[in-house]
Length: 376
Ligand SMILES: Nc1ncnc2c1ncn2[C@@H]1O[C@H](COP(=O)(O)OP(=O)(O)OP(=O)(O)O)[C@@H](O)[C@H]1O
Ligand SMILES: [Mg+2]
Image (cartoon, rainbow, N blue to C red; front, side, top):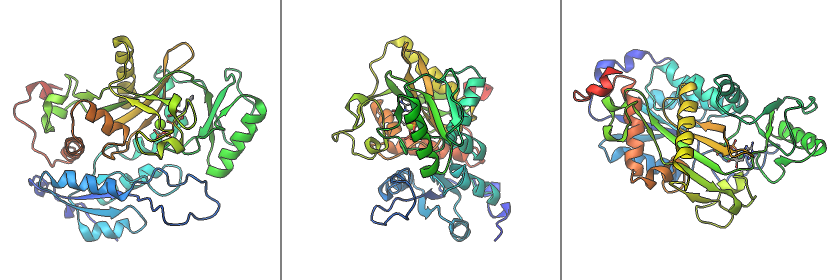
C-alpha cells in the first residue's frame, strides 16, 4: 500500500482539533504465552486502561481519538483511519530496535507523531550502545561489557559483584534475584541464561550499591513557543521534573527494581517506596537533573524522557539507562508520579507531549508572545 505525503498536506494541519490515533501494544494477561519465550515477555506492553486514560486526556481538549493496535496490521489501519497525528507509546514487535519500528513506519507514511524519532528510539532501547555514547561524551556510567556469547574473557575493570541484564529490554525484564552475580561461575551461568532466554546480548556492569533515582525531562529549546504551559519551562526551554527516589530496600528483591516489583500496584507489598520530590541535598539534586538533561540531549531525545540513575560505592551518580517512551499510566508510572508531585495533572502532561510533538510537524501556530524562546 502507499500513502503519499499529500494525504496530510501541511496547510490542513493547522486546524484546531485533530483526529489523534493512540498507537500501543496491549498486554493480554488472559492469553497463554507462546512456548520458548521468557516468563516476563511482553511485560513492557501497556494495559488498555492506559490507552483509555490517554484518549480521555486528549479528548478533554476537544480532539477526537481512535486506538490502533501497533501490530502487523498497523499500516492498513492507518490508511483506513487517516489520523492527523499519532500519539505513540508502542513498544514494537521483536527485532533489535522494536521501539523504533512504529516511528519508522510513520515516517515512511508521512504521518506526524509524538516523541522521539527512529534513531533515538532504536539506540535508547540498546543499553550498551547508549552507554557507549554517554561514555564518549564523558557522562558517568558504571564500567560495563557486553557479552554476545557468554564465554568472553571478563575485562579487568569489572569487579564482582556484577549486575547482568538483557541489553535491550525494559520494565525490569530479565532482572530478578539472580541478576547480581558474585563470582565467575554465577556470571557465566547468568550471561548464558540471558543470551538464550532473551535471544540478545547480556550487559554486564559493576553493581551499583547506592540510592536509585529517576528523573524526567520535558521539552526542547523552543517549547515555550508551542506549549500550553510556557510557565513550566526554564530559560533553556526544558522542564526538569522533581527527582523521584525508589527505596528499593522494600522491593521484592531488595536493592533492585525488578520486573516482579514493576508489575505490582503502587503501595503493594514488595513494591519499592517512591519518594518524590526525593530527600536529596541541593547539590545532588542539581547533579541528577543535569545528568538526566545531558543524557536526554546527547541522544537527541525529543520532548520527553525518563533517565534512571544510581549512586556507586562512593556516592557518585552513574547513569543506568534512558526511557524515551516512558510509561504514562496515571498514578502508577514514574513520570506521572513525578508530574503529580508538582501538581501537573495527567491530562496536562499528555496534552503537552501531544502539542510539543504536533508543533514539530507544523500543526501548531507559534505563540507571538514568547520573545525569549524565539531567540533560541
Ligand atoms: N548496574 C546496576 N547496579 C545495580 N542495580 C542495577 C544496575 N542496573 C540495573 N539495576 C537495577 O535493575 C533495575 C532495572 O534495570 P534497568 O533500569 O536497566 O532496566 P529496565 O528494565 O529497562 O527498566 P525500565 O522499566 O525503567 O525501562 C534498575 O531499576 C535497578 O534497580
Ligand atoms: Mg529502568
